[in-house]
Each structure stands twice: as structure tokens, then as C-alpha cells.
Image (cartoon, rainbow, N blue to C red; front, side):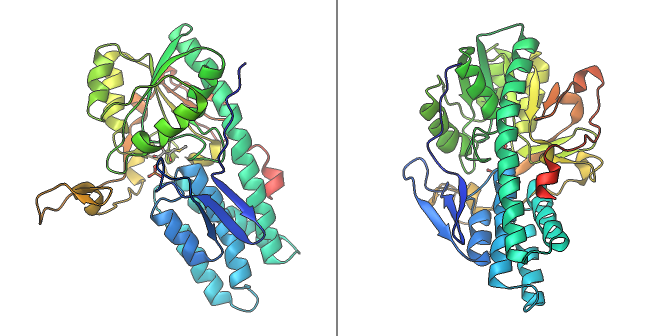
Length: 355
Ligand code: MRU
């Protein structure tokens, strides 16, 4: 297998500082932010300097470590609790953020070490878990795609950014595309630009180019039409929260692609780590969808495009019902929803390192 390695660092901890590649500046500039307090981290999550469900989960865990240093819980319990709540609720749709904050808090409560040390150890373990999951998802997903499509070469349509920028390395849906490319089975990737914030146009093209994969960018509304003309063999998306029944919240536009894929008879595959599955949410109807306000729609990268005084509706995510999903691929399994298989809790991998 030919390897195409990532040379950027999405999120790291260095001596009390969280280092983030500022994704709002890509692809024009590769700037790293150095964040040493909770307010700074929460701002970075809210403005999408760090984004993607697994990556904000890791950021949240490091945020707890920052909070424990800034507001030692034994001395400043109220400030510490408020900081944790601020981190946990910075973005509401991706379950990874609240889950990883809760796991890191549990590690603090169990440990006899200082809260700052216990939190940091848990955050490192969470980062490592996401890193390993990406490699495993990529391989499992690539072979599942080859199986479903009867072999390569594969043309894969995808939305948003689900690569190393959205995780720690390699990603979820984009890890599958990267693995297909490394195996020599990728004909082409077709990323959607992903208005309003252009994660596909700005970030996925940046990652695809670095990995040396063939790709052509399309506008979001071209996706379902191109599927109807046989332009792709498979649609691969990530997830922000997968409900217990398989309903999947992901970037706005995913649902339209799923409808288009169903109409065209193209497999529609969700690729996500087990950390994105939320058994406490029964169906997609219960998932809170982040509303990011009108400005991102009435302007593009700071340039007003709508008539002055216009307002807008801006849901950041949508929910694809399980019945439109062919399979869910995680680091641990392939669940064929199209064959009536269901998502049941698995004994989580590598739990003991976090606990
Ligand atoms: O608003 P974003 O950019 O954080 O949205 C990200 C997505 O929708 C991704 O598809 C999802 O988090 C999975 S990333 C591996």
C-alpha cells in the first residue's frame, strides 16, 4: 500500500498549551494558535478554528485539563464548574464534545493524582484513541466500499471535511477515501463545497491535494443531480451524532445527498468512530441542531452577498434517517442498516486507558 502521510498537526498539547491549526485561515495560511486558557479554547471551538466531531471532542478533553490548571477545583470549585459547562456546551450537535468532557471529568474524579494531571492523562488517551480509530475506520471502510461496489476503481462523493483536520489524523469518511487512494483503488473524489463555511471547498480540497488524490469540487446543489447521472459509485459522509436507531446528524446537505443516492441506487455510507454513537438519543428527532445565525449565509468570508437588510436560516447540520443509510462503518464494525442490522452497544475499545 502506497502511503500518503499527513504533515500538519490538527491538535496537540505542549507544556500547558493547546496548539491548534487554525482552520478558519485554510487553505490560504497555515497558522497555529497557542491556547492557554478556557475562554480562548471555547472561542476557537465556536468560531470553528478547530472543528469536526472527533477533533472538538479531543479539544474538549484538553479544555478540561486547561480548566483544572486555571481554576484548581479544590480552591475554585465554582469557577471550575462554570468553565467545564462553557466547554461542554460550546457546540451542541456533535456528541463527542459533551462525551469527552464527561469522560475526562470522570477520570479526574476517580484519580488520586492532581485534577490537572488526571485530566491531561485522559485527554492524551482520548487523542490516541481517535487517532487509532481513524486508521481502523479507513481500512474497514475501504474494504466495505470495495465489497459493496464489486471492486474498484471507485469514485466517491463526500460532503464537508472529514479528514485529519476533523479528527487527529486521517479522519472518518476521508480516511476511507485516503485508504482507497493508497490501495490504488480511488478513481476520483467528488467533494461538495459545503456552504456556508466551505469546509469542502477550503479544507477537503487542501487535504486531497496533500494526499495526491484525484478530485473535482462541485457546488452542493450539483450532488444529487450528478448521482442521478452515475457520476459516483458511493457517497461517504462523517457524523456528528448517530442516534441509537441509526439516524445520523451531519453537515447540512447530507440529507439531500442521501435522498439523491437512494433515488440513484448508490450506496450511502456513514463513517464515524464509536465515540460518535449516542445510545442516550433514541432517534434523530431528539438531536439538537446548531443554529449558527444569519451572517454566515448573507455573506461569504466577510463579503456581503445578500441584499442589505436580508436575514437567513442557518442550520449547521441535518439528520439523515436510518432508512436512507446503507451502512455505518466504525473502527469496530460495519453495520448494514440496509440488511436490517442494528446498532447495539459494543464493549468499547481501549476504554481502560481513559478510565
Ligand atoms: O461544522 P463542522 O465543520 O464542525 O461540521 C463537521 C461535520 O459535519 C463532519 O462531517 C463531522 O463532524 C464528522 S468529521 C469526522
